[in-house]
Image (tube, rainbow, N blue to C red; front, side):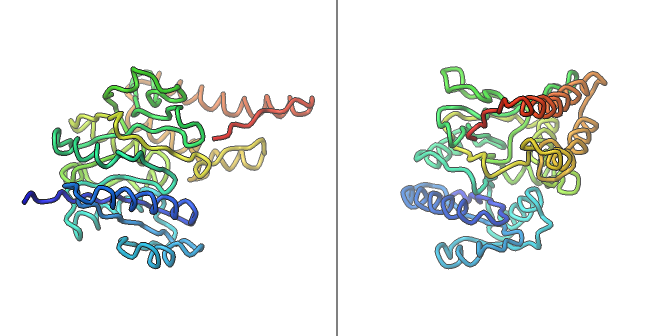
Amino acid sequence: MMNKIKLGVLIPVFNGLSFTQKSLSRLYKLIDENSSTTLDIQIVVTDDGSTDGTAEWIHQNFPQTHVLTGDGSLWWSGGINLGMKYAIDHLNCSYVLWWNNDILPAEDYFHNLEQIILSEKPEIAGSKIYYAHQPELVWSMGGIFNTRNGRKHMTGMDEPDHDALKKVHYADWLPGMGTLLHKSVIGKIGLLDEKNFPQYHGDSDYTFRAKLAGYQIKVYPGLRIWNDKSNSGLLHRDSYKLLKKSLTDIKSNYHMGKDFLFYRKYATSPMAYQTLVIKYCLYIGGFIKWRLLNLLGIRKKRRTF
């Protein structure tokens, strides 16, 4: 009999019980339907001090889940690090899969993942991510970062799915969901930088570091997941108070300090910083623009994702 390949699915959470309920129900349904698979899938949830009964609900409904606990200071990177160490050291997993509680996989996700692992034995692999509220609209086929001009973006972002996005893509970095790592990668480059990048950029910093270490990063269109963007990020929402907070808060993708730290680590030309200048000019300029237009009675249409 062929030995099963142990895979740890890592889900860091802080509250958001309704998302966790939906996520675990979907995951265990797919695991049960693929019971003959050569994958031995273990789900590891890092509950970073939730106050909404997350741990209790998991123990009552899915007691087979490995629940690790934090005190609220782990954030995403710390939660993933704790999960990776547990999956490798205690569960003897060969692979770990970064996951979030606000994503749902396609029916054939784990079947396709199994085939990729068996046929290609990848060291790092990425998933194709769509918007949950617009299921045919792609959010990511992996990230690209040009160290000279500073352009950092995700392939396929906001594009309706099309033939070019149905092929394997090569990436410079990956987002923190649907990212597969072999334990040898962690053994070589270590854990995520939870001190400098506790939330945003923890994923791109780690996977870009892996690319610089010589790893090839492929994104597979057959690994389809859908992300509910309503559960993540911090934006200004046309509020001066939130604008200021979004520029300095760990939960914000517009945290200026973390952005400049990433570029300080990896940019190879001063010209790279022009990308950050443009990013924040557009963000702050857009805020000012719509505040003025609001005074004239012109309202901005909100995105539904």
